[in-house]
Image (cartoon, rainbow, N blue to C red):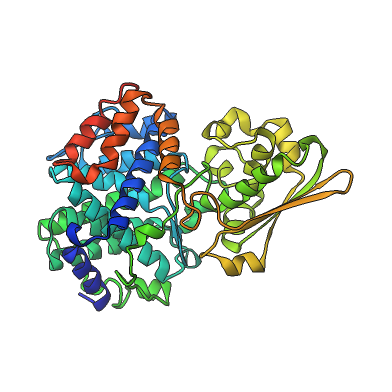
Length: 452
């Protein structure tokens, strides 16, 4: 086992709930609350229903359940189906580093494994914090996209680590789980480019599925390559510079991840905030031109391709600055319903999009990833201009959602399953997830949601 893999394996094996900072535990509860809300909101989407149909064709011993329906399937397919639901509406959390990604993609898989092996809420929280540490530290260590690798690679490594902790694997087997996951799960960045496909919502959950599978193999004694990071043909040979540090900060990295206030790619959060800040100051019908200045990663993801001015599906529209800014200016808010196919061709929206230009600012790029800033400037037909610079979007670690605001997001999204007392009971259970004797209790509640 190479030195990097060994360091990660030691961190995984040594993780102990009783030594975790209360702040990290609280932030983990918040990420699980956010993830359940996102999954509930997407449950009835036809695509999510199709993925549940596929997952329902599988079986496993022990089995895991699909949230909402309660249908039993294999652990890995529950990881995939539940993870896809919570990812589908692009409302889930984000980590920004040299690479960017959505670490909550792993939560569906970790819950499935925890349910199947009847472990406690404390173990789930510990494993989730471990998984985030591995995922986010890999994001911080190298720029995967410049080597054509996708963030889902981080989900495989992180989920393998979290699963190893849930299964109680020792240092050696935890290392094998990480080695098996990395050697088999390098995924292509092409999924984030051009016209975006259905796989955009599946890539991260699929990475998590692979990581869970790798840990289950390691549990049975299967070994992986001995130097998956540092050896010949290993990860370092592919990505070049790689300084993968684990557990190096004063606080677990989950604390620095970001929640979303709007259902849009994280790189669009600040720009939508800025557009909404200007909306009450400008009559939309008088807009002559709108300029969006943002940082390089946001420009590349949301404004650097012609497809962003002509989105034909949800996946491309929620990665389009012209579309999301136009909708925000017209409607005064941005919702998941704005990505329904029949709305994408709205003539008024398209006319406003034609007047939007997106540019990349060196100043804003230099501030990233510590700050994801965007500036929107609107020029009216009479020549007057209005501008707003959003320093940190609502929901970011620097401008966080308060617990009460997160609860409002939960109650709004969970309404797809239930509202009133039932939603409040679910929220109360999630706030005390680390006190559950068994994660099965949580899944019981998720599968008994009245509206699912």
